[in-house]
Image (cartoon, rainbow, N blue to C red):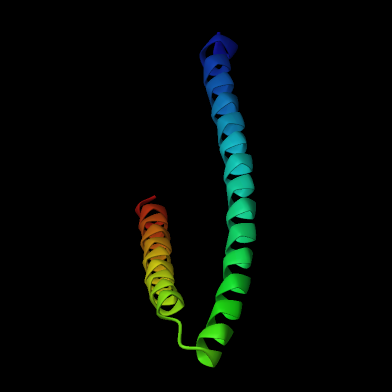
Length: 92
């Protein structure tokens, strides 16, 4: 009788663990792709900044400023995410 009661719970927990593992693998792949894109963007920005210092190019200047603002927004979003995760852990 105990197995009939506990068995479905164990199965559900196992399914949940597998689902979480799949989600983590998927997120890891996304993080690797994002890291690669950010590395390319960083290299481009360094080169564009060096060119901007050498020659006044209004297009590069605007692009660099807007990219900087986007990076600040992304950092704010990450901070907000970490805060929510921390708050969620504290509730448990």
